[in-house]
Image (cartoon, rainbow, N blue to C red; front, side):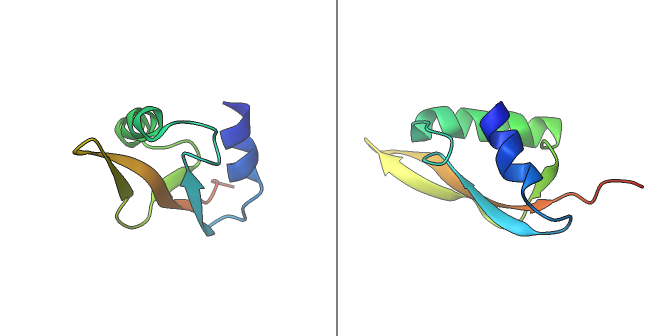
Length: 75
């Protein structure tokens, strides 16, 4: 996912930043599924930092924004 890689690669090692459904041009439902896959796989150059923000749609809560920290690359 090139857009995600661009967002992550712009951050310095150890930086804390936000990734949202809107930034990736996804619906909250799609973003929620993607975030859950990231959490299972350990992220893509970042780790979760804080509680994900959820949006209620038709009585269901979906993750629509996460705060993450750029993982320091091994040297």
